[in-house]
Length: 342
Ligand code: A2P
Image (cartoon, rainbow, N blue to C red; front, side, top):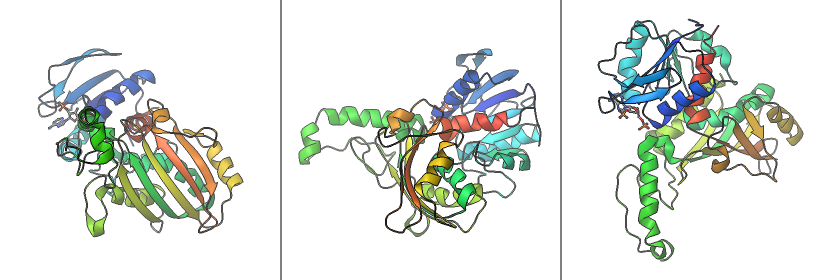
């Protein structure tokens, strides 16, 4: 694996919800970059952004020359990653990719910082950032798996609209304004459809029991990511994951309610000891219930409602919530970049 002392960094998708968070996190953490290049579509090319590395002009991905880039953080969608990430690798860069384009490739490590850091060393040019929902629950599942060996996880997500990028946040804002003028319709029925085709149903004042698109056997691509990425990150193909991914009218913060069972019984005291000492995690007790609003803008994943299972005994149930733009995406990408530093 390539390592760096003062890397030249590029952010691809720099104008997006995740890309702009990547830039602020690099700045906040005093990342020792020599310089930072900002790359997006032709729509944004030429815009000037003030950064810790001076004023930077946004470049068009189609014409940007990857030569000289050491670390490229990609968050411009899977289609762009598929085409351009290999070109950056060919030009000598290590790519940290936030899309799903390479996550399940055998030669691409899928890494949650503080959970499976060792896997970074296996990279051959591309390291994949896991899906934002998987990432958040791995901060709880990883330490518990290390302690007791995970066998089964039933997980239901409560995913914010920023998981769909800026478009998702704009859509929620528009729909809330639309429904504010007709609150009676929300209570008694007869509400008018706000329009827009981003989601299958309105998201303002609503809950959608479908995040992503339906693929195999009635499960969505988001749900399959939770299944497959969990197994790859925890290096155990036999883990049984039962996922349901739900979109909620929240700007930032993906929550997951999960029940987990292991090779042996895990009681509350052990779960508290494991999660209380886990890095990047805050364990909250029942006087302090973690919500999306608490998670917005912070790095730690918040875990609460920790309890022993009461139906099928021997496991634990919990609620984990993390800022999907930070730990769920941009922060983890920067943490992975930090693992490449010497
Ligand atoms: P742009 O702002 O120029 O469209 P989000 O997920 O928040 O919507 O952000 C998506 C990011 O990916 C933005 O930075 C966006 O740039 C970038 N992007 C989208 N389509 C392309 C493209 N065809 N080429 C390069 N960058 C793109």
